[in-house]
Length: 395
Ligand code: ADP
Image (cartoon, rainbow, N blue to C red; front, side):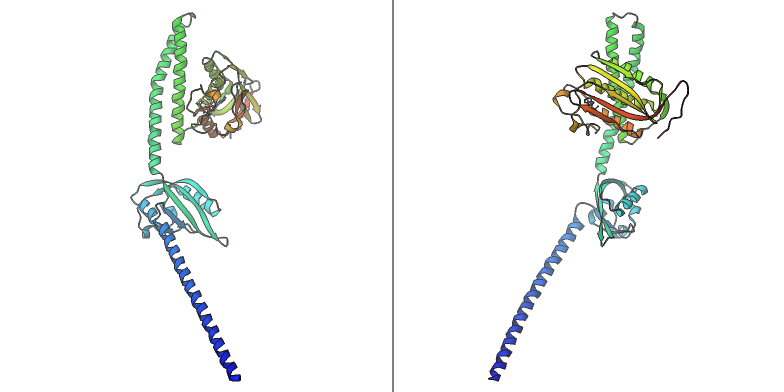
């Protein structure tokens, strides 16, 4: 009897062991399969990154390139051993740019389309957009993941367009200025005879030529901004005098508006006179253009502490709240029924905003649709009290 029991136990434990072995074998087979799949995934991923058409690299916490894909090596013309293991700063054309990039990344910023210039092996320089952030493990900096996109061709194309724009504007401005001075001479000769048809024609011609000169100025400044060459030559000058000149020449553009000046006497500002003249001309020009029913336009000055607030208000078509934030973008024009007749390129307010930015100032707008708009900005300035000329605080 006992023998039977022990044989039974023996068989039972063998069966159990066999079952365990089968389970183990199955598990092992599954592990192997999973391992193979994992290997395949790793191979696929590394193939994807190694052979991606977009240049990629990793940089460690010390700024050393620890990996780069073939597209990156091909784009810059280096062999692996000439690139990987070297400081990334060796390959940037602008030291302050790579310093800024590494600083931002180490502070966990994500860079989107950050412009930089990389040095190629053949001595040329590539313009790129960098998109990058940092991989951290347990809070420790592992490496940056950096994607670079070559925009050299686009940059060169933009440069060519810009040079063309600058050249055309300059070439247009020169003959137009000559024509404008001849018109001035003829006007002076004819001014006594107010009923003269010729005089009226000359006045109209002068207005049109001045408009063209202003357009050429706008395009020239646009090209300068794109090139980063818009200079600021600030001096102290009477803003009332400048406003007076702008208002006087703007009055020639309209017969249905009254253009008034308010509170600008005895105010001195520190700014680039020509550029602020252009800002005012653009704002008053828009006030006329976008109030087709006519009405009052007021150019005002107001003293605010160390600043002088200059404003241009109209009673025109106004601007929807939703459009007000985009007005100052390059080439932005509002597409609405009320301004369909108005011509323009959408660069006037962009230039205004860029010029004021250069003066550490900002253009602001308050507007109500169908009621009118008020554009305003602040400049460093003081008002002069009876011959005393206080010092302007310059920002
Ligand atoms: P442009 O007048 O050549 O279109 P701007 O950059 O000067 O370009 O102005 C951008 C847009 O802002 C204009 O198209 C117009 O719709 C709107 N705008 C500018 N000034 C005024 C204003 N005073 N009143 C109403 N809309 C304005």
